[in-house]
Length: 125
Image 1: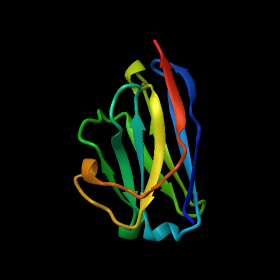
Image 2: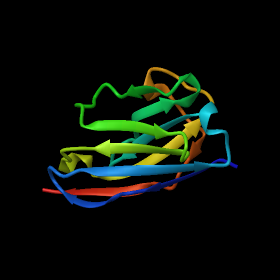
Image 3: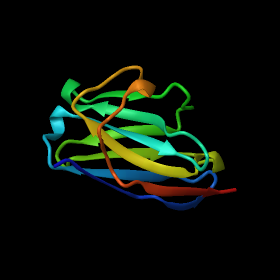
Image 4: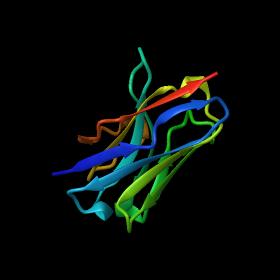
């Protein structure tokens, strides 16, 4: 059974940084694409970034990002990270980790079948 557990969310001031973690288990890590999504209050869920571990850890980012997000994969720990720098109040959302054996581009069309419970990120101004 695929399990994804997010951590690292919290309340931060604008301009700060956070590193979110997604601990994966129950599947062969190197065979999957694992990514991060977020959903802000009253908005649709949007894809942020993903790493295709089946393709030598190829990284993909959503077009709307301004370079403040960095995804990284640690195969030894079966963990994927999302570093968010220079946080803005608009980044306030629940951040979800997701995984699937199948990867689709462009990123906004990717519909992974396994999801974590999410971690809340709140940015104060």
